[in-house]
Every structure is written in C-alpha cells, then in structure tokens.
Image (tube, rainbow, N blue to C red):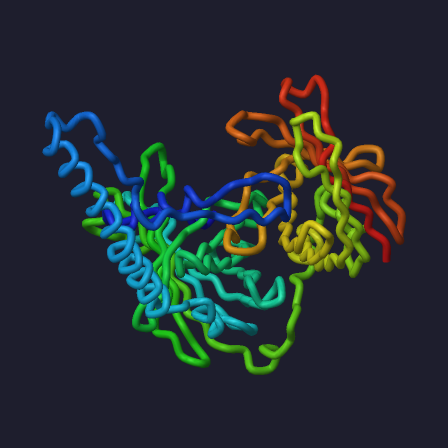
Length: 415
C-alpha cells in the first residue's frame, strides 16, 4: 500500500500547516461562512495607571489621545496598504496543476521496506487519468497499475486554497477506500513540494511528495520519508509519467469495476447522474430555533473506481445565499463500509471529518463526531426513499450522545 500524508520539514512549513488547519471547520455541508481578520491588535489605554496629578495628568491624557489618533490615521492605513500590496503581489497558484490534466502512461518504482536500509524495489506500469471537477475548482486523479508488486489502485483529489495560495493533495488507496490526511504545499520555479506527517511502523515520520521535471508531455513524482526531522530523505515511491496522446482528451475515463466486487460496493449506483436538488436547511441548529431556509440547484454525481466510489458536485441558490460543495464517497472493501467526505466551497476548500456507515434494507446511515459551536456532538447522514428517479437525504445533530436527534438539513433529488 502506498501512503501519502501531510508534514513539514522545517519550522516554517509546520507553522503554515497549523495556520491552514485552523482555517478548517465543519458546520453543515455546503455552508460558506466568512472570516474576519483584525488588521491590528486592540489598543490598550492605561487610564489611571499614570501616577501624575493636576496639569501633568491632563498633559499625559492629551498626549496619549494624540498618539492613539495618530496611530489610527497613519499606521492602520499603512498596514492596510501593505496587506493589499502583499495580496496583490503574492503568486496565484490555482492553475499550477493544469499540466496534469489528461491521461498518462505511468512507470512506478516502489521501495518495499522503507527506512530499513533495504534496497529492494518493485516496478509497476499502468495508467493515470486526471480531470477537472467542480467547475474547475478541483482535480481528480485516478491511478491503476500492475507489476511485480501486484495490482494497485488509488486516487488523488487536489484542492486549491485561494487565501493561503497552497494546494491540498488528498490520497486514497483502493484497498481500503479511506482518504488520508492531506499533503499540503505549493509550486515554486516549476517544482511542487508537499508535506505530511504519519505513523510508520510505530514511529512518526515526515513525508515529502515532489512534482518535478514538468513538461507538456511528461513529468515525474517522488515520495520520500524522513525519520530525522527532515535532515535526510529516503525516496520510496518514484513515478515517471508520459502523456497518452490517444486518450488524453477524454474528459472522464472511470476505471473498470474490479472482479469479485465486495457486497455493498455498488450501493451508491442509484445516485449516478444529474439531479434537480431542493435543499431545506435549519438556520440555527441546536438552539431551539425553527427558522428554515430553502435552496434549489443541481447535483451531478459521477462514477469513480468503476463504481466503488462516486463524486457529487453540488451548486444551489436560495434567499440565504449560494451553496457549493463536493462530496467524495469511497467504499472500503475490508470493512464493507462507505466513507462520505465533504468539501465546503468558497474560501475554505478543505475536506471535513468523514461520515462512515453502510446501507441496510434500502437505507443508508452514516455517522461521525465533530465540534459544533464549541461542543462535541454526533452527526448523522441518511439516504432513504430511493427510487430510479428520486431519493431523499437528511442530516441530523445530537448533543446527548445519540439519544435524540434534530434534523437540520434535508435534500430531495429528482431526475
């Protein structure tokens, strides 16, 4: 199994990742909230701490007031101007992965036992197909290869964060159908470096994934581990990709279904296609409020991994605003469960905590635990009333460990 995770090889990278992690939040799928950033810290006015009397106190008071007004008139605009200039000059990297669109022949070399001193490598050959999704705001990469190391299937979801000017690269191995934490990074001078941290053989290691030697018709990628804090790196996964001109213009090329598909792997087949979508949303969950709002839009659900996964792309509008979201659903053939991974649109395109569950008697139930309003709650997603031309979805929260549930999000899908 090939693992891909997030790490920082130095203090700066770790700080950047912490900043990005702090941006992540999960409220209700698709809800886009705004961030407010203070340009300067609050001014502290000492007041009675000055030990002066009479005229000296008055002079001190006027002098402090003058300094305060002066700072407001001159320093804060300067901070604003500097921030605007930095924002304007900072490089926009949202098209950095455009070179990766298309179909590629890949040759993979994989180190069997990393960080053991071993030099035993296996080789695989296969195909990589990459397409834009979510109206170009993300990319989906599907990988299939065979060789002396056996059969390998994987996928990457690439999401660009416009505020941080960085990419998050999420990987999932077809053997487990679970999305790993993201590798995060950016491109500089034609080279992309992405970092992660993971537990490997009981130890925490740093992981680096590099994109390099990029041309129109070829590029290379390399994954390395470090167990000494980034001082040295050992490559363990190297891939050379060359464009397959015969099929590179195909927009979607799902991998064929694997033989002997496990029970439950086709449970989301009912949802493939284009759907008119009506959303009914509770504005303030878990507050006793009964104020709801409505949206109407479109959902497009496409097949990945030959049906053992699906990608939902949602766009809707209503009186409360615009909703956009991306849902990646993957089947775990070992546990016979699905993981539902959600990405909010707007300025925070990072994946939230997955919902995990399965279908039984024509209904799907999926659960997770998350932070909501500063409290740890349980969340439940459910699919029901499934027909060839319609289905029903509900989300509910519980703040009493699942004893009672409050529905806060209802979607109806019709072809």
